[in-house]
Image (cartoon, rainbow, N blue to C red; front, side, top):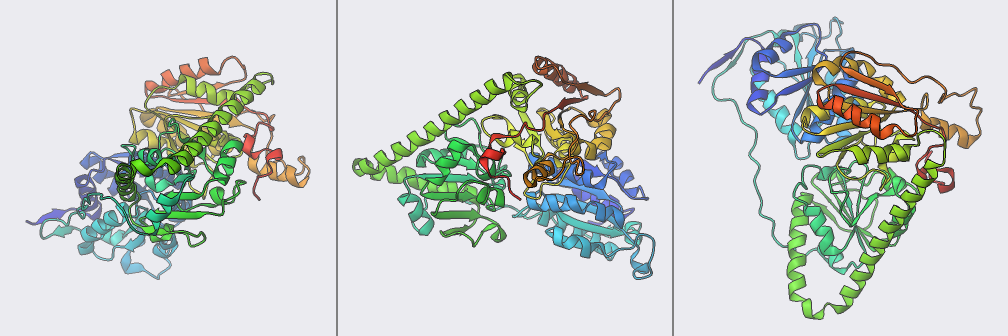
Length: 569
């Protein structure tokens, strides 16, 4: 079978459609042949004004859906401008295919218009970077890119199509190559090896769930494993959304964002089981003393297995390991039922400590809400409570990583629903733009972006331009007039606020308007729930809602306050 495509973009788009792609994010270059090919194939382009935001949207789509996202770019400065988004996609393990234009192959080295060694620029930031040098290589290169992006491990890939290859006819002599078939492996009980021995010997285990478990735990396999062990269940920041945060063993995000009772619990465990995470710094050095215990690490990516911790390291799929260990625990329980009195007593004591820590966290949250009620203005704890009380199902919260929007990281101030957060790189504006991609991936979900005004400004142009055709997102914007994290560091060092104005709480909130945007500034302490409900109703009709909330500079999450002593430098 022979097939002809008029140009490279038509061939690439044909392969994308054949593999289930229905959306593309981006800002194409001067040529619009790609746009024409997308239109002809019925693939929707979400238009962007900023290449970074295009990458953030694609990353949000990929993280929420688990499917391939596509981002279209021009050449030269368009690629360098998108580099921050590429970095974020790599750190998040998001399967994103970047399609970029390139200077003509025949004019390489001639200092042509926007000529740049784009492969050299992008290679450190992606799983695979390739420039297609001939029309005959378009199809195999695209299939390779799709294969590398979806992994394992998943991550962004970069495919560059030079102008003279882009316009050439592409001929395919036979059926196009297909993506590799995934071999389904039946999990079996794991009854040997150092990891299993450590798990069996543990009486006070903690399970730490990383971002790699996203879309690998839809049936609650991790929660069942934690139940069999009676283990405290934590996530990394990137692991938010991978487990049910309403589960009775869930104790929040470990490390920097953990409440005091959770930190005490974490410090007293006798084993950490890290599932598909990278043991990022905010977990390891975030104010919670890391217990001097063995760490069982499981990761399908060798690069995700840290050599900094004692304990067994398992190279493999974490879901497969969890299923195998759960079956082995069930069989061991049956076999040892008559002789398990001692270990049962220890397990019950640990389960009681977990429940006590959760109760203590709930009491602290209630005390914080009571304190907030007595203070002037809308406090962030009150705002999160209003968001939870008015939310429907299914829902997802998309977050940034600024000092004040980090309230939503601190269990139990936001619980339930899913969550999409930036990786350890925490680029400004990620959540603001990613929310558009998340909504595109999950149109039936209530999508709320909980962000600061600095992040909102970074994405404002794209929020406005996508509101008409790609709305449905509720933006709750905490307005302190700048960058709260830097201001906290300034205060810690005793630097003058007038000379170094990282925040200006008295500055008016940013403005965005349009017929498809519902915009309000919230100042009335009694109004948040009513205003949020009205905004959600507007979003349900396809519009974009923006609620600006001026916040006090001292409204900082409890784990990060001065008396906690854990704000990292």
